[in-house]
Figure 1 (cartoon, rainbow, N blue to C red):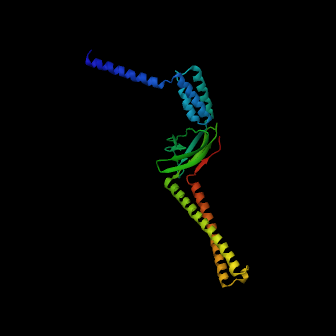
Figure 2: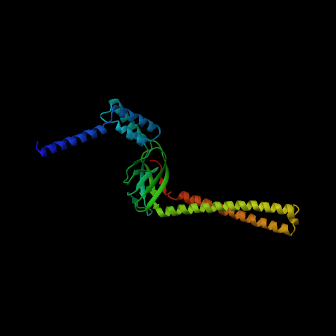
Figure 3: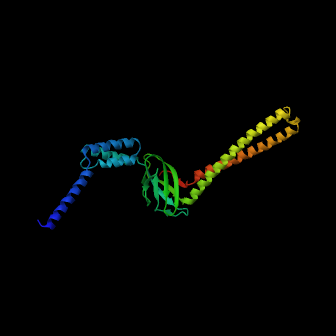
Length: 259
């Protein structure tokens, strides 16, 4: 056989071998089909609907037994009905709608752009993170209800630097406020200790009959009490403001009522 013809035959045999191997890898066995169906049922019970659907799709192959294929097809229909879907409208700070935005749900990539299509999300509580190459982002906690369809959600992104700065300011305010509360509490304890000691040792139990040392101690106790009040009030206000700043950073997501 000529060398060129032999090379062609060898190539054809190699290509056919690759096709056969790929088909063998793609076609599940009867046991694979049954196992996929069982895995899907377990995932469905855990409300991992999208993972369950992926398993069910694999048991629709022609190599799967007919009853298994039918059962998987029926379960896919049920899961599609149960899976919540959301239609996100993503806006930049100026109110312009964006499509070049990625969405991560609980850290997993779900969408790389938006064009008005519905996005399926498993039932339950989730953390959604939206980000744009333009430097905008938003984060929101969202509860998806089973069977809820095409729920409109309006997203307003904010500059990432602004979000980070707001969180830093919030954390700093909480820290300073906490320190103020601690200092105020300590001063309050000192004020009481100083006042009680003055009454006992230098005032004969009556603040109106204090000697010179008692007068100084009572005056010091009043100053400590004033400092305690200021520290507690200022610390509480700062801490509360810091919590608000932290909580509102990245929270420009508006979820509308279901249609």
